[in-house]
Amino acid sequence: MERPKLLPGDEFATANPMALGKIINVIQTAKAVDNDSEYTHTGIIVDPHGATLEALWTVNSQNLWEAYKGKKVLIVRNTGMTPKVFAAGMEKIQGHIGQWYPAHRLILHVLHVAKWIHWDRIVCSELTAKFEAGCAEYLGEDKAAGFMRNYYGINPDDLVDRWKISRYYTTVFEGIAE
Image (cartoon, rainbow, N blue to C red):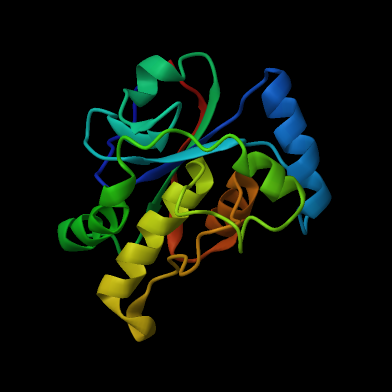
């Protein structure tokens, strides 16, 4: 497989076939408008080689291709992404880099109150959505190019569903990472 050309600001989702991934999918499916959920983790691609920024045990970076080898991955690109838009999105999430993963907030997602109770701690999909909110703020309301504006309470399926139907997103890759 030839890897796609990645750009800073591309976003990704992965499917977790383990027990936690299955539980997340059940919960996301219950909330999903389309009654379907496949991806359980999201993040941001920060360089052409596949370095990511994502909420793992802490918010940090790893290589997409190495970390998710053998797993299903979706990579998308917003048509409004530029280096300046990317920088604005990164600035918005800068304060979260290094934060510990707030596992206790997963319960708040189940109870559908994570939108209001967050203590400025974010899970993976909220990090990705907050990155998008920074991009949207930079562009301004009339030119926000399909970027999310809210982020607390967003789950991976919310992002993936929107990416797949938005005219502002193109699929760069969907398949098994090798």
